[in-house]
Length: 316
Image (cartoon, rainbow, N blue to C red; front, side, top):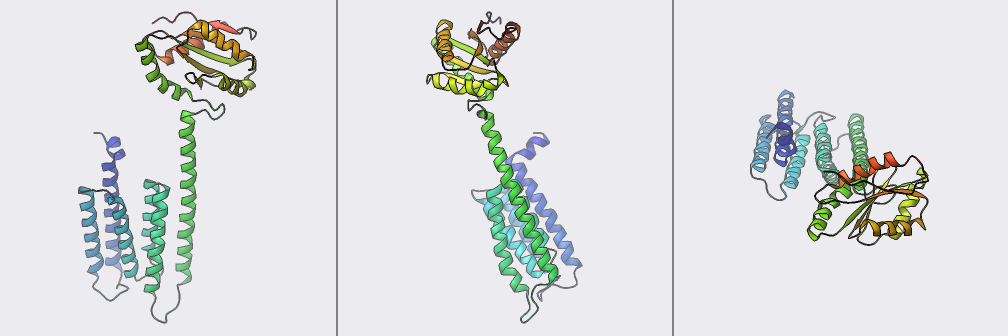
């Protein structure tokens, strides 16, 4: 398995996350070695020991994953970050940056729901730990700490909005993959997927299948033509957006003669259009048929007044 495929897999993602946790644990250990003393009266080796246990637990989760292990890993992250924040003697505590990294990276990898859940968990940890850091009768949070918290909150809100925007854009892109946003018909990609089962079925049943491309004389009438087409479709007929100028129509169990009758009925309610049609031969692909119809369009529509073109037989 090559590197891109390994990283894209679930196992690769978990390994990458473990490597990131190990790197940040190493940085936190070096930081606590450098500080003169801990916020709480205890040996300076405690943070290193806690981080070693932290990595050991995550190593077990990496080797032996189970249902819900991701949620357990997030809880362990929050507990570890809260402990480091409680032991950090500086004001403002630099370990606050690790909470920002954990929340944003979780949102980047897990999407908006996991981002919001970890953000809520981080808010609970901060609400518990920050008061515990205050000395009895001491001064409230310094201005620098308040500023750092405000920056963290602003970053989280901004990142959350970006995640929500990306989620909306992704959903729209997925919808556009299957449905054309202008005409409301299925897209050409969806038509190709439909043909994947429709063509073999008709070959097995030896029933006729007619393919038609329709192009309005006025390009601005494409949506109107699509609406008119939707009114005349049988439940078995399939209409789709073929390209910027044309609509595609598949008529199952319909020969070319009956296809002409369908077009004549459509002309009574639709704006003027030109159609090119052909029977779909056996053992061919729909993309090949549509390309053949489009090529026939290019050769045969020099005059807009021409309403119907019969494509020549498709040669294999």
